[in-house]
Image (cartoon, rainbow, N blue to C red; front, side):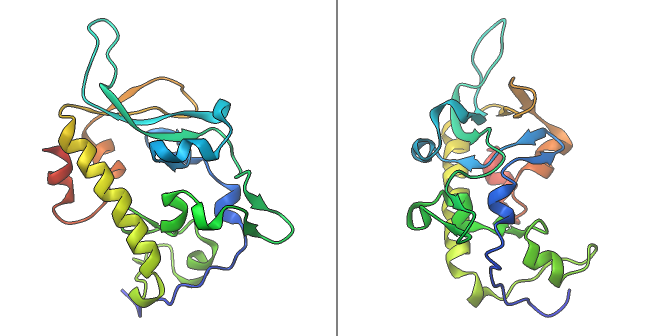
Length: 187
């Protein structure tokens, strides 16, 4: 691991223009907490993650605890100024970017320019304090939901539009990579 990188947002808008990501679970949209659904057009909001189990013939989650938008680009991104029109109230996942489950993402243009593909990204903590706080809040919410609703974890891929139970290696890739967190979430 190299010298920690001092993060500086380029305000390029790449993250705002790529809200849907290809994963091993399918295409997943921007993570939205239940209270953040209202910031996007209602017709573009679909479930993202669920927990627990209900149904006998058609199995599905007991509760939906996160949502996603089907939009590929954020309606709140101003193309001319390259600024967020709801910056002070943007979704938690936007406040945490470029962090996702305490890991820095190479999808961020700044980080892509600063690191090699095979190298672990190390960020200087003083430059990502607000991002860490937002990421931690989101992770705490996920842990609380998983603790409250026992049973399987579910995902609703944007491209498939049906619930999938998450298991095995998919679960390891899907969950944040924090020592001990996986066991807390799966309790």
